[in-house]
Amino acid sequence: MVEVLNKVDRVLTVKPTPRVERLREAFVRLKATASIDRARIETRVMKETEEEPMVTRRAKVFAAVAREMPIDIYP
Image (cartoon, rainbow, N blue to C red; front, side, top):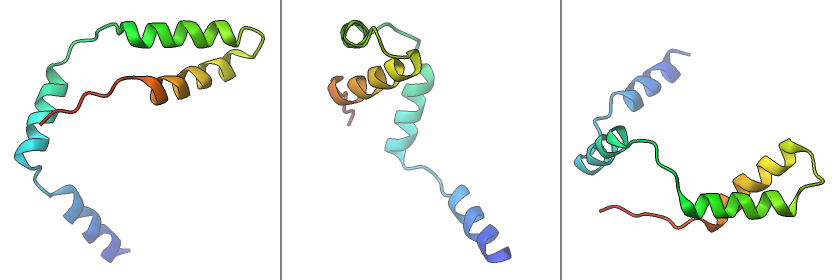
């Protein structure tokens, strides 16, 4: 048990790289925004799944968004 805790302490005390720190700071500064791409995907999937239970519809929206949304890659 002590060995596991020591490994956890080592992982939790690793300093982030400058790139990770920049990305974290950029993420913290983000304000909530609406995405037209996500809205279009969600609207399409909700129309396609009108007869299904809401939990299934939301899962399908999530899957479609994960599959189809454009990805932003930051240096």
